[in-house]
Length: 112
Image 1 (tube, rainbow, N blue to C red):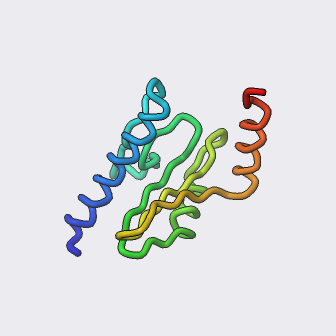
Image 2 (tube, rainbow, N blue to C red):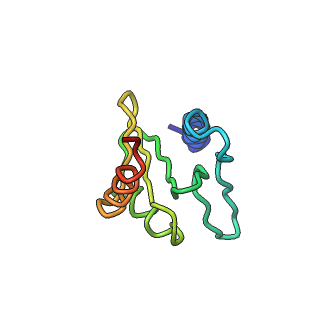
Image 3 (cartoon, one colour):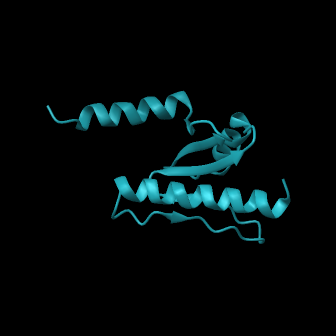
């Protein structure tokens, strides 16, 4: 796959994720992150509570995507890797401690 085609596939995947997150969080200002050559880091998709790294490849390296999210996420944002291999379902990866914190918050706020 050429570099241009690979970038286009990644951008299309990011746009799909933006739409999926907007469907469940309509007023959250979800949008694609900005990629600057200045070296500043931005998530691939801007979501209020997550630092989201999106990867769509023939065979995605989930651990590398998660490592990138962890290294770049600022305090107060859960690092999240959303990865899709060609012709496979999309996977979401979080660190266990972050997932347990999210699950605890959901459990405490659930309707009873």
